[in-house]
Length: 261
Image (cartoon, rainbow, N blue to C red; front, side, top):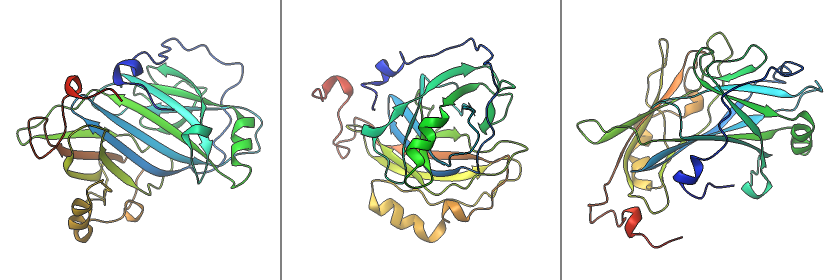
């Protein structure tokens, strides 16, 4: 269920006032696993995707999950979908209700980020979760946040902070980190990632890219994300550098010069 464009995405639902539901969230049925953090970048935006393997529970109540936003700033748009796992398909995705929140409401379960940060509450119907997880024992929760492009530093690098931990909670395993250029955008020239936080294992993590030479060069100096020592205060810091539209080698053209898709 792709967005037509960053501009169309900016019109996605943004509910600012939260009404207290009749019942609080059911507890998380088990410890979720972050199967993938996918970062898709362009000069005009950065899209951050969490794919979370979510087990169904026995509690008949709905899950109301709080997700704190990362950086830079609140996203232009945010949405959530539920789909089968381990073979997710956007064609089989069910959109979920989302409400923005200045901080975690008392009736929501924390999933990512500090509780006092701004974010969103994602509503997961229990019958839908159990139905999609019936075959394999898990469903996949996909969270998408569309950000403005981070500012460049003096060397042309841009940085993103991706929420992972819940202080005081259980650290979640992260299995894969990807950084790729959006369709039609200039290629990613360099990408790195590491856990960040007061107690973080700062060793560089393996980042999957669409450029095989980048991954091959980093294999000897990085560790798999699942091998890093995790703490509940960890987030994920992603740094990337992208060719610009003026680079002849990039083969990319600014949006105004690209043919319509």
